[in-house]
Amino acid sequence: MFARTERLLLRPGWLEDAPALARAIGEEAVVRNLATAPWPYGEAQAQEFLSKPIDPDQPRFLIFARTGGAPRLVGGCGISPSPDADLEGAPEMGYWIARPYWGLGFATEAGRQLLHIARAMNLPKLSAGHFIDNPASGAVLRKLGFRPTGKVAQRYSLARGGEAACALFEEGDADADAGVTPMRSRIGVDEDFREELRLMAA
Image 1: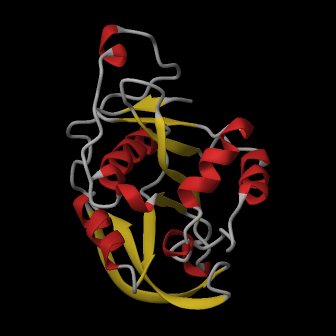
Image 2 (image 1 turned 180 degrees about the horizontal axis):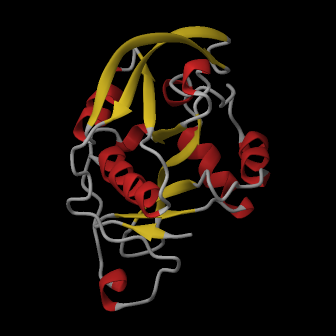
C-alpha cells in the first residue's frame, strides 16, 4: 500500500531502508517520545523493525519527502492496537518525524493521510496519545481533529526505561481530509508525481 500527499510519500518500510531509518530516528529526542523503540537505535534495530510482518488491519508506513531526486526519509506513522485496557485494543494512530524536519508540518500532513486510509479501511475512530513532556505532538493531534479525553495514563517507554504520563486523545468529527490526495494501492509515474517538489528549509 502506497499513498501520497502534496509533499509526502507514505509506503511500507523495506529492509534496504534500514540505514536511512537508523539515521532518521536515531536521536534520543525522537525515540524517547515513542513507546516501543529502543535507545540507542542503530541499524540492527532498524532491520529488526523492518523485518516484522505487517497486519493488514494495522498499516504502518515510512514517510518520505517527495523531492526532485530520490525521496528522503523524514519519519514514520501507523496504526496499532491501543495498549490501554479500557480501550480493548482499539486502533491507535502513532507517528514520528526526524528532528531536522520538525516544524515543517510533515506530521500533520502525514496524519491527515493516515486518517483517510483508516476511513477507507472502515476502521473505527482512532485514538492517540502523547507523553505530556511532548506538547508539540498534542498540537498536531488537535490540528488533525482529535480532542483530549481528559485522561492521563502511565505508559511504558522502552527508550526511557520506564513509565511516563501520557495524555489521551480521541478522534473527533472534524474533516481531516482537506488537501489530501486519495489513497492509491500503487503510485503511478504520472506527471504530478514526477514534477519537482522542494523541501521547505528548516
